[in-house]
Image (cartoon, rainbow, N blue to C red; front, side):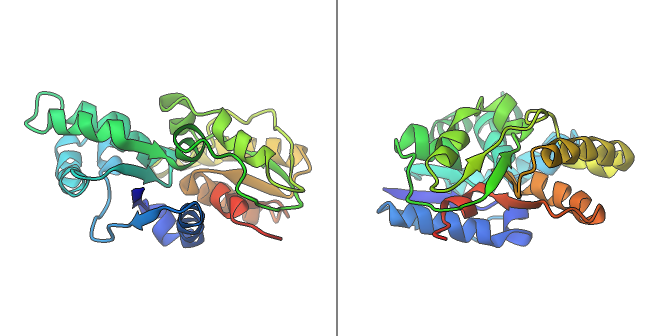
Length: 239
């Protein structure tokens, strides 16, 4: 299968190894990867700020570029939600409305694609560490993805998954929310960090690099030994 891989801005700029791991995993399963590096932002920051006109301008090149894609995999729950759910909203009653609906049917968040499209849960990974998992808001609440990531982690050799009490609680990043309300955002993140710390896990894992960036900054400020890691990097590990 030829897979069009969408690498969100945060993955590209902050955690490129997550993108490299995704490519390695998908190619290891026998698929070809088309990664359109000419595309910029999907438009989610503008959408979140209520600037739908600007969001449409950012989204139109994405629609055109993905028109003939067989399957589209997105390395983030938030950006996957933008393409799969919110494009249908911003293009409602627009000339591109039907194209946005067609795109939605081909879009998959990374863990969802592995488990529910390909039927793959065991990638041969080995990661002998205790981890806890953070559910990103968009993946959990908009895409209804709770199980796929855990199904994948359960098959990793040596990995011990310990659920934290606040697994489904927002980390406080929220895109533009963290910029507009930094004190509230940090306080929410501290609740998440404390819950993760209580599990005695070595790694805080998620499918969203934006959440992980926010949480790692707080953990580093607290001089915590707990580290953040994108799930793709765990699944690509062969330690």
